[in-house]
Image 1: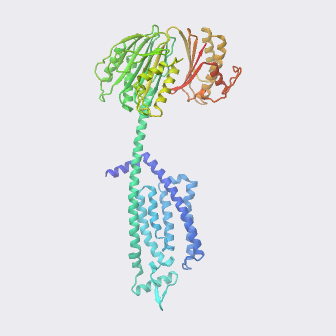
Image 2: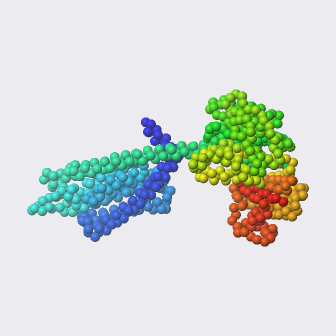
Image 3: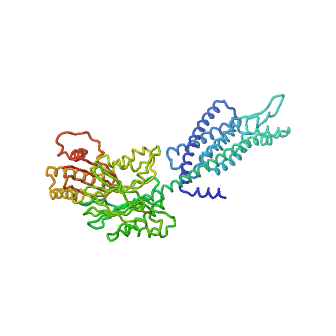
Length: 626
């Protein structure tokens, strides 16, 4: 009963039906080729009859000349379908047409050539194995057995002379007397019965029964293979279906995970934030967030939920929602974590937990108030002088009714940054099983002075990818970095629909900013060329004709070291303008503004440039030291 239920369940499974009909279409195609080969054999046999190689009654030849062309046409019909009407191959009943057209021709040959074609009945049974369907095998076997008996008796009258069927015939004057023709064979068989030799019974007992036994053996062997293959097919489909459901669950978990991430990065004259989450194949519960509490305070957050898949994603959503509800300037980080802990602790039957680090930064003074709930210690520093922040580890959220965390404070100097990260980075492994580790992460930050947060993040991704060297990522990798500029930076941002008509407005925005902060006039013209080229690329490639979207432009200018950073963000089609393969050009190129040459202008006029695809957004960052 269990097997029957499994079969019925598999038969209504869409994945099963698709695989089943795909296999049927392929089996029908193969049977079409077999029928075509059989039609070739029929042509050869027909020619041999016409040339007298096979001897039959002259009364039978007209029948042969009619039935053979009909059989050949029947056999070739499936081949025509397989070439011109391929959709018919997937029809549930088409297999019976292909199989029984083959059986029909075997029956004809068995009547005409009883001595040579008996084994062909076994071929009919074996061919059903292509369909992985025991029911089809039983139908074909039953039909073949019955038709085989009928064809034997027809062959006694119409086929080539076979002594196994007709015996020695009537002996007259010491010679075997038999004459071709229905009437003469009927008379001969009747005379043999009068002489005590019933060829009808002997044919059934000594000719049909042994061959039927062999065909039955062939059927049981073939059907057992058929059943085994059928079961393997169902098991494979069930496994694939489970894998597909698991894959769908992971995709849903990823969507949930990405849906929690902020839409835009925070940047103002004092604080710059860059973040990224690189999800693993088996989704975990990493998350990050940041909040502009007011004009003077910014909060950043990172966390890692225990477990993987949909449960972790749902627990993460609950945690993120709590933070959004409780984060406010009137509460300290430890108070916020305690409120979040109480909420996620209630009803936590799955006994999941989350590690978390929350920091609130003063945009004016750089003071950082933070609390750590069992998370990795952050990294703090600038210009190759980075260090791990000494802080209390605290305890995970969701494990107890009250959070075991405390508030701590330190101050960021101008230009310093704080990086929060999850253990997916430090616990990344290479093919030798070695961890990336905290020391390697710190050495990476200290080995050079990074011009921007985006460059630092790019370097970190590249280093981890090279370290893993093809080993599949086992956990999410998440990091968020806040850089404190102090009072040394000016910034402005603008968001408009990405259409050609708004390009002049965006260029005017860049020009007004340059004028206000007295940026070198010799560079302003170049900045407008760069802006025109990149904005036009966004309009043309990120949002093709028929699609709509926005373009977000941010310009940041360091008043102390005269460094300008231009950022363009859109949510359109992935497109990296810096991958355009152009030959280098020389000379004055400031007036060349079309096609791929425009990207060369950008590369030549800016000190640094970078593209990234983060959270389904195209992010282009350019930097110029003036």
